[in-house]
Image 1 (cartoon, rainbow, N blue to C red):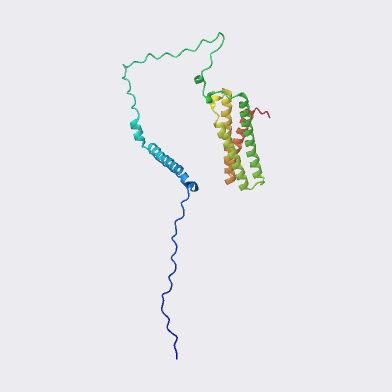
Image 2 (image 1 turned 180 degrees about the vertical axis):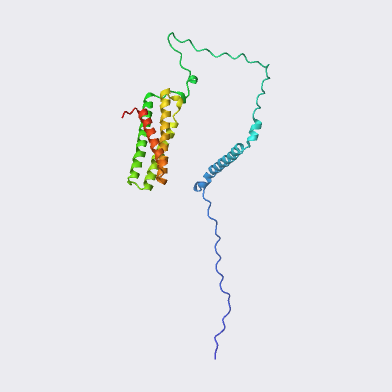
Amino acid sequence: MAHPPSLRLRPPPLPAANPPVSPPPTPPAAARPWLRLTPLLVALVGLALAGVVLEIVLLHNLGRRPEAVAERADPAPAAPPAGPAVSPGPTPAPASPPPLPAGQAAPADPAARPPAAARAVPAAHLEALGGLTGVHLYQTHLNIGLLADAAESDVYTPAEAKKLLETVAGLMDAADKQLGDVPADSLGADDRKALEKARELTGLLRTQARELQAYWDDGGKEHADKFHKARAETWEGIKALLKIDE
């Protein structure tokens, strides 16, 4: 079997060498505008740094302790030496009031006025006080008599009559307390005597109520007699005080 003839071994061809690459040309200054801005940026940065430094200095001066500022303040001037003691002059006497015109009376001294309790009560107030006191005495005397007759006629039960009598006695005591608060030195002699008589009649009215209640409790004749005796005396006193003619 025949073989093909052997081939002569030859190295593969080498690739062609790349041509040298030259760097791109440097653009002219006109084509690089940032180069013209560099001085301006440097100036701005310098101004910013100067502002920061100035602010730090100001903050440092403002933040100094007040003691340091006080130390730099000027010292207070020394007080002048004390002079010789001067004795005070005589106190001037109070000026006397100017003389009043002829015929004019001097005003009343407030300190010389009598106290409120000693002042006279106006006539209208006395009339009202006397009228209300007379009505109080007359009506209380009448109420006790009507209540005694109603209980005797069985109009009220003993419990109801007792409760009504307590009400009448309570109103009588309240009125008598108010009469006792009237200052006697503010009344004239006649009015003072009338007030004393009214309070005396109030005592007789209390006797009526007390003896009537005792009569209801035990029916004793002595209580009935004391009751009628007090009623007769009370009525005579009311007629004299109110000037009632029968």
